[in-house]
Length: 398
Ligand SMILES: *Cc1c(COP(=O)(O)O)cnc(C)c1O
Image (cartoon, rainbow, N blue to C red; front, side, top):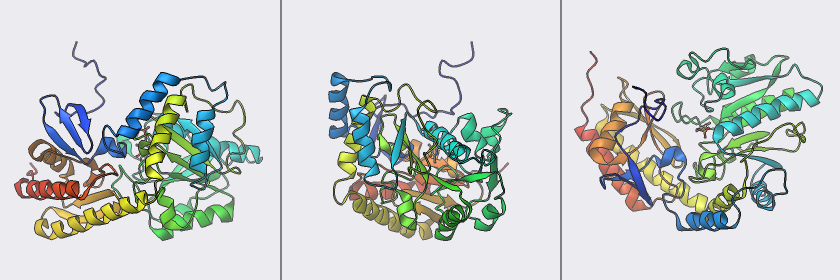
């Protein structure tokens, strides 16, 4: 048999982590890596955070799972705490980001259905978007590499260029339900929505009775130096998806909504066997215990500024390689100059300099460290990055 025991859908690299310590990953042979990938923005508290570890261990011994047929004091408490710190009135807990996206799409369709407008089922989404890998989520992006061979896809999506407000508005018609957009695009290339764009979408929703769905699965939960990225824009969404940092490594996601937007989601319309079980809720509470401490988000913003200004100093020294810095807070990317070398550069940093980063679209490499990094980790990252930039040979096109 030639197929691998793990379905070969990932081009897995040679790093084989077996342990984590704070901002470091340790491989099978004891190799150490500075982890500025953090499980792709998941390990917000680093590896082995004692409070998170203890909370999960205690809850596992107390009560791991019960059905959503029973009352959930654990779920109510976490939902209440999240609601108390953002726009939302209600929460549906999931086990992943893409399940939160599915819930968001269903919530938007049901909203117009119960309003007596079932024809308003179409979501306007954006080029280069990444919303996950379910059929619904790949239908919500125009990226061929995710869609090819999986047709027929889910109808009901239209695509506009990201940050092009006029193009998005031009797609509104009698079938439009709303917009689904990452406040800061992650996989697509670390591009932050411009204030005019995000505020313009909000305004259009208000003008036309549409729903604004923000996908903050990557950019939410402290990543940009605020609890949620929309706070930078002075607007609120109607529906929002979160995941990744919400469990800091425990599989957890959530679809948040206002009371109005969720009015169609009544008993029997949606569900999940595992979603919001006591073990997941304990992990979610432990993450918030840390993040909602006074000054946590300000500290993320400060570390983000420090990292960004170190990048700014680095770029002129390697201007044959690096073009510009993108992103917000500790969700940063560096766009590289042509040819498309970001993947090779990520591999080079990993294999020759012990620094983990992640490639993204548009020839960008992403830096997504744990939100609890110290200045010494930033300094170490910059040392490794400049050494990596000096030793990197741009591959020749053949
Ligand atoms: C990671 C991600 C998803 C998908 O989350 P999964 O947990 O992999 O299903 C969706 N949207 C954005 C913006 C993401 O970064």
